[in-house]
Amino acid sequence: MPSSINKVILVGNLGQDPEVRQTESGMKIVSFSVATTESWKDKTSGEKKDRTEWHRVVIFSNGLSELAEKYLKKGSRIYVEGALRTRKWQGNDGQDHYTTEIVISNFNGTFVMMGGSGQSSESHSENTSSKPSESQVSAPVDDIDDEIPF
Image 1 (tube, rainbow, N blue to C red):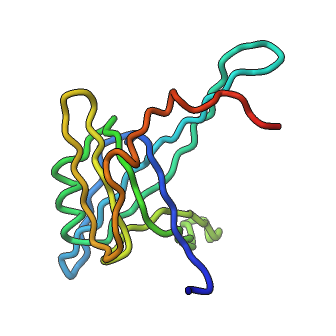
Image 2 (image 1 turned 120 degrees about the vertical axis):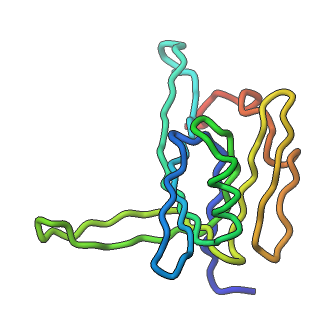
């Protein structure tokens, strides 16, 4: 059994079309933002409340990058499985900057394009473990109890 696990699973929607870059060695790097929204009913006012979080996803895998570039578009519903990585860089002002991303790289990540009504879902993975079926990841979010337990 591993001593630690770095695994992130998200289901959300793309906020914009993926950005594609290429390294000097020819490897494609695809990045995009995924929005996840949490909804609940305020106990005092009865009003519906929402909170949206944005997550940066980066794909370092030629095969998955090609698929993401070809099929992912703004608004696409997607299941993402990857690892958290924090990068540090220095800006033009000399200040240190940090960003945390969900990274999908060779053999440790998955993404599933989840279609709407009448569309099929496509799963793409380069990992060796089993990946979830569509029925495991596409349960309607509206069926979740709106009450916050605290």
